[in-house]
Amino acid sequence: MKTSPIYVKSIKLTNIETFVEEVELKFLKADDTISRWTLILGDNGIGKSNLLQFIAWMKPQLPYDANDTNNLDPAPVINDEENEVLERLVHKDQNGSQEAVANALFVANQSLNKKSTTRTSECKTEIIIGIDNLGKLKRVDPTLDADAQGIFYKEDVTVYGYSASRQLGKLNLNNPKLLDTIPNFIREKTELYDAEEILHTLQYAALGSKKTEERQKYRSFIKRIKQMLVTLLPDFEQIQHIEINPPTVFSQYSTGGLVITTRHGQKIPFNDFSLGYKTVTSWVVDLAWRLFSKHHLTSDKPLEEPAIVLIDEIDLHLHPKWQQQIMANLSLHFPNVQFIATAHSPLMVQAAFDLNYAVLHYDKALGSVSITNRPEGIDGWRVDQILTSDFFDLKSARGTAFDKLLSDRDALVAKKRLTDLDKRRLKAINAQLVQPPTSENIEEVTNRRQLAELVQKMRNK
Image: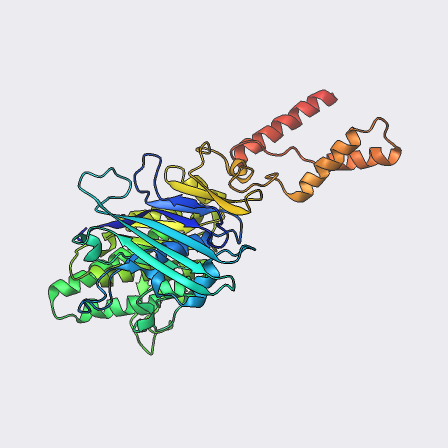
């Protein structure tokens, strides 16, 4: 790792949209080290995406022009937003004029998941947004507190954002509007670089570069991407099963197309991938390309350089098995990236038991959303237990129709006298209510059922 790592440690919001009372989201593990992963959970519309946006907004931003002596101080990115955007962020009530406050704490020279062994430095960013009783902006006060001679005045904080709407790009590698992911992330319209164009470009560079060292660098990066895809995508087990076709009018695939051979021997071009495969392939290749482009001139291992990556609804389109594995697999290939993601899946919570997670709840008494950082007591829980916990707040892990049958049966059993109609109804319900499984897997469920059937036969003799 050639670049000094810079990560976010915490963020506080007060009187901002759903967060009326002060809330703090921490990105730390139980031992107070910075977690490689933070999962944010909560109901739809409660403010999960807003938290991700504020992480991006609050990062320190170096001046655009270092020669402008009147503008040498860094400021949070949010300072560049339009007035209308800032006005909408402030929670409004009947008291008229209001102020919203956001704070963030960034730390440099601190490794992920490890106690620091070297001297670290911190940067605090803050913005106060004030509106008048008509809802119009009257105050914007950004501040940044860091050592004037330190790293935050010299190096940019690398943050990449991927919104829930991750649009697949086409032949857009030279689009300058995609260099910075934050504007589109804030607008919730992330456009991904064209994964096939990236791989096609790398293939050409590996073949056409004049210097042996350059050719080797591109070949090595292509191999890393293939290794990453084999790890991330189900059903693909070997690097040689991933092909990057050269452009040819005789090819049965599209120019420069990505083709993968499944374990069943079927060749599938990128255009025929499922939406989940396409989206994950595209945004992971997008991230790899951004790190490579930023660091390949100075680092032999650009994918191991540090960054903060924000992902809204990471579990979108993912099969349950995929949900359980994606965090570990991404960390394997991007070991120094701090991932912060929102999710809805209990399987993601299971996979994050030794990492960091937070739950958002709406407090009716306060009229505000609160944040519980790393709730305790779920390590080793089953999915059904997590679903009925405070994480997801379901009343039951069973289907609503099954619960209705249980309720109807309880009501019938509670009657002192049953009519003939009641008896027929109770018999019909009992026939429908198969004993729910309590075992860990299908084999145990089958064994229990067979044992129950054997006992019943013995009783009938």
